[in-house]
Length: 260
Image 1 (cartoon, one colour):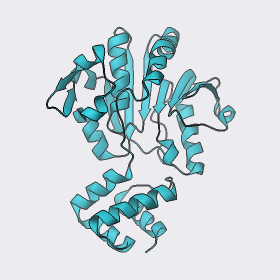
Image 2: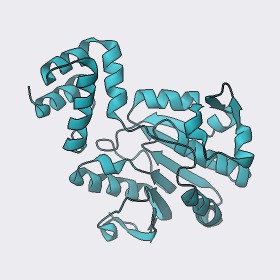
Image 3: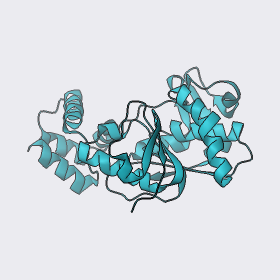
């Protein structure tokens, strides 16, 4: 069994679509996983993944990119808070946001904290999605490690309870501000339209080129005209005019017109 056959079987039997991920990334992750469990080839790997619940869970967890922290790249969040959110709520009087590929929830909860502390009277809807059930379960639990909390300071800290030297839990008040759903960025349609803000940071970089463009188009289509797409600092979107987007500044693209 070769890599493509293995990926096809994983999709057929586990309903996990890996076709959009870069082959070098997937191959490297599989190699590390196989070495960890002493697995010699893809046939053995498939058998273990299908019939050993522990290995299956670990396999799914390691496939997805779940590196995250609150206020990642603080200067970007500061610009969002000081400049873009006031602009967006001035236009609509509310904020509707989608965190796509939200991992364990740091990104949507960061936005929720900003809205709670800095814009307490503004109606807000935050929907957060990911393909990984394990990441979504942890996001809903709202428990975070010290390394994920390094940028949480000041007023925002009061919405966390320290439960050990290494762990914190976010308040129910903030949890209630975010709705988590399972969603595949490559195969599923946008979860809704008319978003003021769509956040998808350091997720699409792991996709093959052809899928990258389709995902960017999908995310752009979910924005209202005047809304912003918030991406990773090193991510560059090509063909923005076809999507109705315009580069605002590194990390932010503005929807300037609707495209069919």
